Structures are given as structure tokens and as C-alpha cells.
Image (cartoon, rainbow, N blue to C red; front, side, top):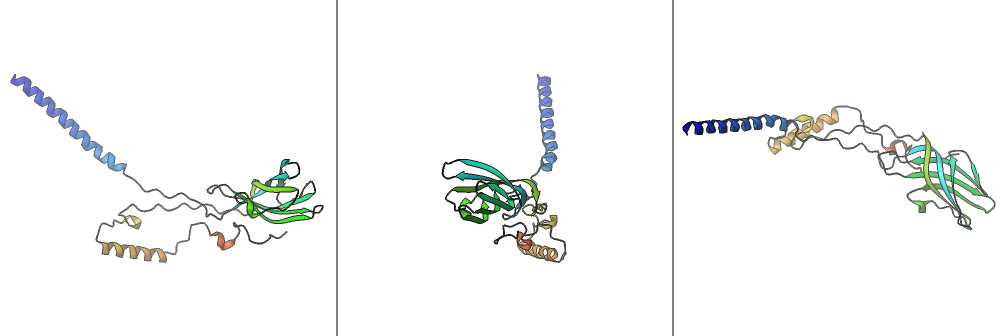
Length: 218
């Protein structure tokens, strides 16, 4: 009997040692997979547009409710019934923004003495309405090749620091006063580094990616 108990005790201690060894081995692996900060997604400013070469229009005949869908190439006049339609510019949203389209339309109907010169926007059809007793025209989308204006390439956003960690990987575990001083020194170094701004230029700087407020030149 004593030998049997001795063997059982030895087997128990051996199993316990293996469990403890396994837990110790998994410790470093778990720490290696700790949460890491991720960079925010790169997104264009909300007023950015991409030029395209073809406008797709839907035309409703108010007399018989017949609907036609036509395509008009940018800069080339298109004749439909008694109307001459010209689209100098057709713009779409870039891929990181919600789908939308805007086009400048020049519509002249000499027979019915109606005309329209202005922007039509797909998501806001009430802002540009062709007031005609015979036809209703709506912009569906822009398609075709990409042309000016062309948004600049998206810059890769910086990865934010982990909570409790200052910029540059310096720990902020000290006193609040020390942390404040470290933040001040970091901010000062950022303003004097002279590094170029890698963010895409604001549309307000050049105006090329915004819908202009006036009629474009012919």
C-alpha cells in the first residue's frame, strides 16, 4: 500500500508540474498578441469631386409619360427632340465618399422658349430644376474616363499612440506635471520640425475639386 500511494503522489506532482510549466510557457505568447493601435481610415474631404467624361440623363416627356435615358459626352452638344443639351462638366464622388454626382447642364429649347444653365446634383434634385412644360430632366450619374478635377492621392494617416503612452513611444506613467511637461516639449518639437504636410490639400486652396458657384467658361 505505501508503494501504491507513493506512486500516485509522484504521478500527481508530475502532472501538476506540467500544468505549471505550460502556463508559464503561454505567458510570453499572450503578451506578444497584446492590443495594438490602428491607423484611422484614409478618407477624402466631404467636398471633393472627381471629373468624368460622360453624363447619364433621364428625360421624362410630361405629355405621354415616356422616359428616355441618354448619355452626353462632356463638351459635346447633344440634340434631343427640340432641345440642345451640353454638359461642360460632370463630377462624381471619389471612392471613399458616399456615391453622388453633379453636372453643369446647358439646356436650350428654342421652339418652346425654355432654357436652363446650372448645376444638377443627383442627391439633391430640387436644387437644379429645368422648368419646362414638356420635359423633366434629371442627372442619374457620371461615368466614362476620369478627367480634371482629379483629387490628390490619399495620405496614410498616422497611427495614434496607445493610452498611457506619449508620442514617440515614451511612457507617461509619471506624475501629471511630468506628463504635461512631456506633452509641451513634444508639441514644441512638432511645430519646429519643419516636416512637410502629407495630408491632401484642402479644396479651399485651389478650388479645383469643388462645385463652383458661377457658370464655368465655355
